[in-house]
Image (cartoon, rainbow, N blue to C red; front, side, top):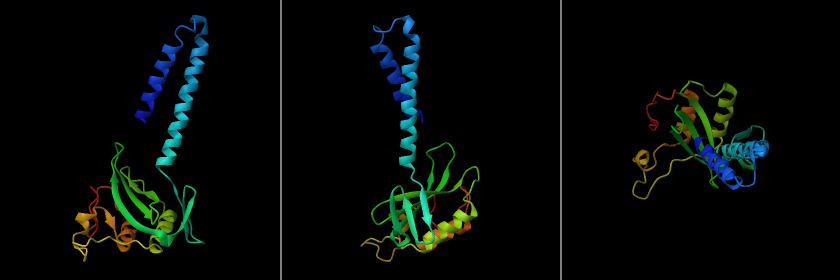
Length: 183
C-alpha cells in the first residue's frame, strides 16, 4: 500500500509544479480539489490492483465447478496445490494455492497469525473441491519415484496431503508430520 502512495505524492508535487504559474493564491480551492481528485483516482486504482492480484475462489457444489474472476472450471481441472507461508505482510498467513491446467490460480487463506481460520462451511466446500480435483505431485526424469519431490518442488502437495492440511487446520507455527515445511 505504501507503494501506491509514492506515485500519489509525486503526482501532487508535479501538479503543483505545473500549475504554479497558472494558479494564484485565490485559486487555492481549485488546487485542493484537483489534488483530491488525483488522490481519489489513485485510491480507486489501488483497490482495482488489490482485487486483481488476489482473486476470490467461488465454489458451486451442485455443478462441481469453481470460478476465479470470470473463468469457470470443473473441479477435475485443478492439478496443483501448493502450501506457502505468505510473509508479505507483517503477520504471516498460511495460504493454499490451487492451480488449474490453464495456469489459473486462486489463493485460499487457511489461517492467519491472529489464529483466524476458515469457517467450517468454507472448509467443507474446499475439501469437496480438493477431493474432486486431480491434484498430483510432479516427478522428474531424474527422480521417477518422487523420493526427492519435496526438494525439487518445495511446498507442492498431493491430493491426500492437501486434504489432510485442510482437515487438520494447523496454526501458522505448527508443522504437520509428513507434509512439506512452510516456514
